[in-house]
Image (tube, rainbow, N blue to C red; front, side, top):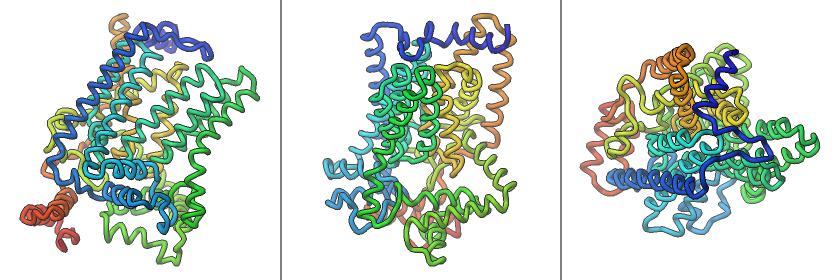
Length: 519
């Protein structure tokens, strides 16, 4: 028996449903529908309860209702929308992808007095639905125990809990990406034009929250055409075309608004160019860590210094600078890409403008589900097991679509710059593959395939050592940026003594923090 046959046998014993159905006939999900519905309901309620408790804990922070940096930008955009300017007249094309600020604008209109609670409760619902979707997906392609374990692990995944409580699009994107994948998987099982059109619509909607998912859309269309080629090349091409059409239909109104109201030809938003430049230039460490305000303004101002005012041209200006760097220093660029790929899979949760671990001070839920102590929990455990699961599942047709999504989405993030919030949409799938990897090891032990188990554990140990190598300290005291943001928030609620203490702490930690000195 070859090693591939042994892997398949162990998958069948420990992980797969018995036997997976062929496309077009559905999959034997096993168990009664009422039983699955009860499990889905239980997972949803558990995930929702955990997230509601977390929200009630963090409202002690002044940043809860006085957000900073990107959260502040989204909130301000939502306030302008809720004031009645729903088309964004006078503001040019969209700077950021519009779906999330429009969601905030609707919630600001409906719940003006309890806006900051309403947003987080909606995101808690989205997070709970994500956990329920992971359970449902697990029941389609794996055994009930695998589905339950993956769903519970997703429910208690600290980074997902954190981002469900942040005014950032990570929670919305995570749910929409997974919903799109589920619809695409269903359409592949039971092909229909409406099914593929619906999956494309959801992926298009997801791209209006975080556009990196659009890198997967053409890959998925090619997969549809190849996977269903036996049903006729023309029919498969039509289905792939309907999938692409669905995505295009969601983008079209945004592009039209940018052209007619914004006065510029911008597909979705014009921050793509500068974001690509931030992650792809010879001074990566400086640009990726630029503070909001003067430092960020200097980067943004490079285009205006060059006499470029039109937003679409500014985006192309920054793209051009990055391509010049890539073309002139290819080996340096390859080294930078390798470094960013390592950072994507590293156990640390890399914050964007603020340290995620500091929020553990406010929440026992987060303190229990996000920590570092020799390993980075949970990603330092999820990543090596997920990598094992991905390696072993490469030859299993029922898992290939999800493995391809993980690979493409990972590379799309690395192409810009990796942070915790940008890899968050992959976490539910990584948890699922980590569960599959664990299941394979357990099945090997039960089958007394000790040689295969030792090899698998060796792979996990090597990955774990790399993923948890040189972890940064878990600084619960907070860095200068955190204290600056806290000082600003305390100032807004007129608690000036506390504000001054926080700002003084910021300049103690970083004597060059001129914004803190000014305040």
